[in-house]
Length: 284
Image 1 (cartoon, one colour):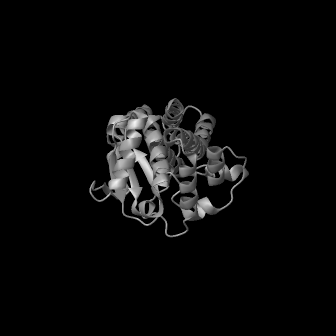
Image 2 (cartoon, one colour):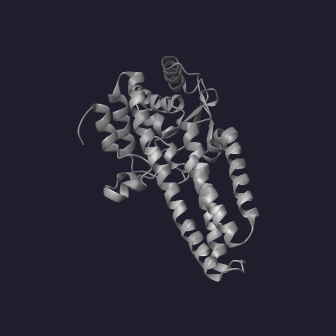
Image 3 (tube, helix red, strand yellow):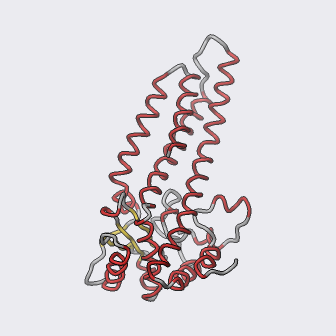
């Protein structure tokens, strides 16, 4: 979070200098703080609405409620609200600013595909995200990444279509404009890389924590195998902004392609083979 604020302030400072307008820096900082406040208090509502999730009927989804209640007791966490996404693609995610305002959403496809042990593995993974406060971290990262991309894109367009207003030194003006454009191009890339790196690291941690909850890592490992093997339609309400929240990459083409080297930096999730191997104590 500190790094993101530094980038935002750097962008605002450079462009406020180039365009001789301190208001640019003030607006950037104020707007970023405002977005953080909104994202903190309403992140769960926004995420659930954009994902098409609806409250799960306790009488209809008895197994889901029983599994979640048992794991919540084991983890020492409050019972999260449960939601269903009516979609054949198997997936799940957790959201909420803290353990007292947490929610877990699963797709109808996930419930129809997994047995009880595998469902326990998935829910334990999402409960671990809640217990580790990943839901808050990931939501804040999403908002900051989006804001940096928006801000830098705005200034990049500004730099392309108009020059600076400083009259004291044309060379300094050009250098400042060039630095501003470079920052505008590189900052969204750096922000996304940080977002993806955080996401992958927290997925491994949630897998490990979930296995400790159930004492049966094979359940989550088998669930990951089934989810990754699904090659049907893409999750209807999936987006690149929220893809890292799901237990598995919601884009089938992306998760089934072999990745190596630099390409792994742009994956929202660790390779499934690596996650399964870590769960079962095997080498990839």
